[in-house]
Amino acid sequence: MGRFRGHFVVLTLLAAIALVPAFPGAALLRAQGTAPKGQPQRTLDIYFIDTEGGQATLFVTPSGESMLVDTGFAGNQGMPDAAAKNSSGAPITRDADRISEVFKQAGVTVLDWMVISHYHGDHVGNAAELANRIPIRHFVDHGPYSVELQPNRSAAFLAYMAVRDKARAIVAKPGDKIPVAGLDVEVVSSAGELISTPVQGAAGAGLPNPLCREAKLKEQDPTPENFESVGIVVRYGNFRLLDLGDLTWNQEHALACPNNLLGTFDVFHTTRHGDPHSGAPQLVHAIRARVAVMNNGERKGGDPAYWQTVHDAPGLADFWQLHRSAAGGAEHNSPEQFLANVNETDHGHNLKMSVRADGSFSMTNERNGFMREYPAKAKSAVSSSR
Ligand SMILES: [Zn+2]
Image (cartoon, rainbow, N blue to C red):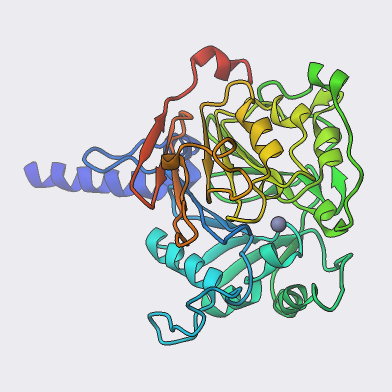
């Protein structure tokens, strides 16, 4: 009898395991971050990788699915260690090496999704280099063309096109979902087009935005490729993050006025590195993010007026920066523990966020281990989104 029962238990377990993928309840449990007893709760991990004022943001879901948004600058960008070799003996490719290091740290051996927001060198820079280093299952971008093909700007784009031609590439359209397993990733801008209806199921999305009355517009700057940026809304359980790439001020305005189409967020990844051609307060203040992360360099982005706009945003608890901004001085930088890189000699320290499906998350400064916890929002704030 004992043996029979033992077999029965094993078979029942096997049957339960076999059923997991097809059983919506089980998928839901996993999505809510419920871990078996004795194992640490698994989280959505987001790595804000320092590329000295470019962008590279890696998302790794609890089930191990990975999405990299942008790839930093190509080459070595004149870093003092240009002649050095990395651990495998190859010449240093600064940002590609940093991204590879984070892949290792996160256990990513195959990249499921590479999203290229647009084709400026600080975003598409290492797309081809990374494709040489790791299998990449899908590319997502705004389409196989660039509006800026000046000889000094086209190299990274052309290198990427050579890889893209042989890969599975998806052209993002506003309103599309990027089907990253375990995440809800919605495209809200691409190729100069924007969503025109509110993001579904998002708290506050579609409501009139009183900030539009005082809102100002700006003249289009002479770098039209930014206008093409793929912008995304990432949702994991009750957690929401906004990343608009290098989208321009007037496009931010259109997403926020007269109605806030995007709703409210936990995290705002600052548009365009904190450059004053973006950062329209009618959007930055309407989205009520609890935490902002700025992908600036020491001397790229990190504009004082932009910093002030974010700093003054209603509901903001903390403002993290990848670098201390030289232009920001004493008045327009966050306290040192919120800066991943503080001095000119600091390079390559990242910020790591770990998100639970209840909407709570932590952020760690990998330079010094400083960590902040952000609790799940009160129930009423969450349920109003449904
Ligand atoms: Zn950029």
